[in-house]
Image 1 (tube, rainbow, N blue to C red):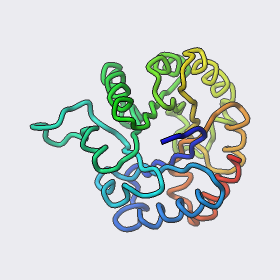
Image 2: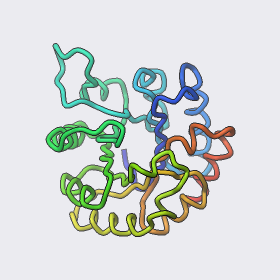
Image 3: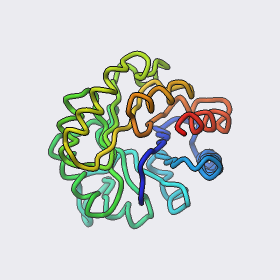
Image 4: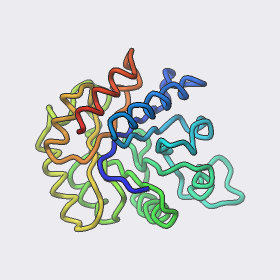
Length: 223
């Protein structure tokens, strides 16, 4: 999958996308992606992956385990997820942190499987450290701003510019996504202006009353 700027919607385990409601979100995102030519990806709750995978829209897992095919009960195994037509995964989200060893091994495994890897980091030093692994994306998300409605692009703009430099320092193909507290098109436009090559957003989209309106607003701001 050839990607550059990317708009990722992480559904977490919000009730707003439970059951068949996830289908409505995916269909809305598909229409807007096609209309504006913006690459949009959805990370649904894990148990709903099979309901939405294999479509024209990119579908990501919220988490994968560094585990193997076979007698491994309860784990999200990358090779099997790939066979279910899932395109990639978040790794090390602030709400599901994992060890450096597992991050490294998962990035390598997803690269071999030709899947997209998004390594979530909480600060610039982590961005610099994990960019060296050459994941598809690094997503910078200060934990204190996640779900706060206060966008990092406004509250801590220097964090984005420093993270951009840290990722470029690795001299590979890794791109930077910006997350945490994004609730408006203005927040998105500012993040792109500061050097981010996409966004990772959750409650700003999922908890909005009008999905079509807010996804369109964000998509326009990325152009």
